[in-house]
Image 1 (cartoon, rainbow, N blue to C red):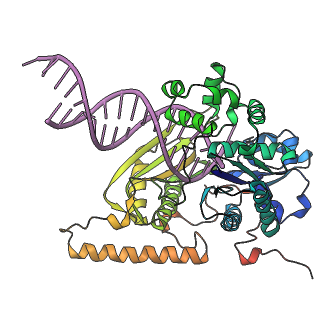
Image 2: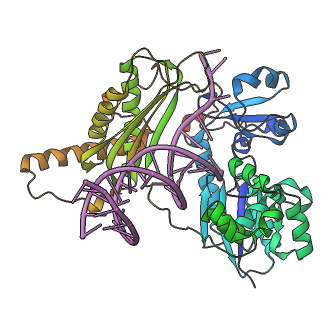
Length: 429
DNA sequence: TCTGGGGTCCTAGGACCC
DNA sequence: TCTGGGGTCCTAGGACCC
């Protein structure tokens, strides 16, 4: 029995999560918007049928969409992350070898299991029954093929939501791959798609038949791997352990233009504090802090400006106050007055494990004591925010959480049904 | 007023060394 | 003066993913 990888993927994940608590929308067109209500990031089948494209800017389609009865939600990541955790723990019952690939996708190693389609059906039914989310299952000998099998299960209802690609006769496999555009392949983005099409490679089948060595020389080893995976040779393993991040980024577009250095500094401090929390959660220290600020990208009437600066730290640190201090230093050097900024971001780079910290023999004892006191403050900060919700406690430099000039827009946010007591759904007896 | 946020990997090119 | 090959390390930028 050949190796079998299953990819389980939640259909229209964010929309499906929102519908759990709004059964009245089960057959209505629904979209979920990105942060700042910027663009469409998830669509129900009905919204797709109306021709709303992925990534459409909301301000451009809002008028027409509401006329067509589309319901829009601001993204509610607390809800999606919670549903994702439940989804992953259900899948854990079906295979010990898993890779939680994204918030709504998980690879499972099915080993030499027979009756794979029946197993796929059981997975679908269990997830649907226990948490109400619709999923599709793609099964194949490699991850890249499992992705394609999942695509087929989603697009063609005849599969009943489960496609075991590896079990199909060769002629059938060829016919199916001839029917899928090359851009659907995992790892082929729009740039690569254009380049491949120029060489006459239009369908997945064309890519599968192409010479891997030539593609490696012309493009990259990644594409070579993809071709081999399409032929059924596994080149990508399951990554079961969650690796530590190599960089941490916290960034946001502003709800409205920000011009003053003080407002910008408050935003940068808040982002640095958030990044520092993520850093401590994975027990790492940062060796450098980067800051960037930029103007609106799509405005013709204003000169675009992008400023970025990375400052190394004298000593790797996870101290919010120190990271904020350096971030603000960097900001001062890239800030230009008289510019309307749309977005800022803080990056933590050069991450190393906390356990690897080099103790400096020559650090004076009073400095060591001060460092230890700071670490105590950070621990309390993290504990309080974990217990009472992010942003309960924070450094004063970040400004007050509500009512600040740069806060993001979330006009259509749903309640935190599953993560806040006050937002629990009420059932009428 | 107006187009998300958070990552990874690979490659090319420069600095530096022997 | 400035010649050559080969190696490492770092950074910036591109492409991709969800």
